[in-house]
Image 1: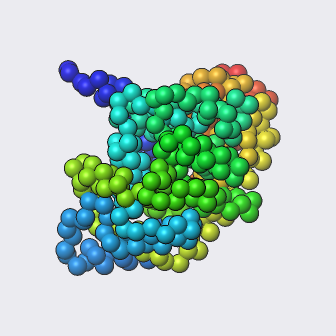
Image 2 (image 1 turned 135 degrees about the vertical axis):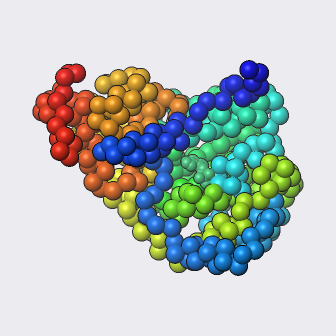
Length: 405
Ligand SMILES: Cc1ncc(COP(=O)(O)O)c(C=O)c1O
């Protein structure tokens, strides 16, 4: 069969694959623990549900403008004012099918074949594939000091005459690291000086721990005119637990948004108006749900860290925010894909291997589930890997006997 050159290079989304496996095993009734998820378990804000339902009940669900309904743009403008102290106009905003589409359309609007896009590793699995979809070259860079916190010199080292853009995701998926204000200031200044686009993927920016406050990248922009090449990405998926609504957005200069709108118009048209109405209600509604999710995640993260720290050989780094602990299990198996499959087979725990995030030997463990999921999941993993664990483990009624250590 004839498949395009680009199509052939695109790998399966490992995170979505893990969700599929989880759904199949659950449907079979297996006592699975899913530590692979990237979505909160909390309920969607009630305001969002009523607003979507009211629109559905009207019986008139039509095409939406390609770049989003005016009410959603208005909410995003207000959000941008509140969190970025940036006054934008509707022409600076596009609403897309999730932050994922906003990112994809932004990349399609700025990249030519052979252009290079730099992003720190570990990185969200979709960045390299999205860049490749544009015929461009992903350039991941691991911080040289072995931490999850990149320094400007790490980025500088991989710049070339082909560099077109830098993507920064902080707090980061998968590491949970929130980059320092110093680094954000430096990277903003650097990209401005070099004329690079700077894509700030801020999808987790309010979900941070230990009393930290979101960092406003726009604060450090010198040229705050329509020449600015900063693109801010956000959405309702994570902060409002609305992953299934598929509403995200980008804020950027008007010319770029116009091009993004043209691309999106031919690609998918605007996102469903029903879901946009839900997003408007979530953004404009009572914000206690965001704080309550943040607190749950912080608590879950503490519990997971305590368990991982008591796990011989595993190196876990305390996340500053987001949904994940990204722990180093290389002492047990340097091949993270093998390790994740082993844990699934032996103790029915779903984890996500570090390899597609650009760092093998690690597993991404989600803090989105219940405390029971977290404690039970890590207990099972420890039992499967740690030779000092007892030989038997009960999963419900079922007795497992370890015969592999
Ligand atoms: C870093 C990052 N950016 C973007 C997205 C996409 O978010 P959405 O569900 O709004 O498309 C995700 C989702 O996992 C993510 O982790």
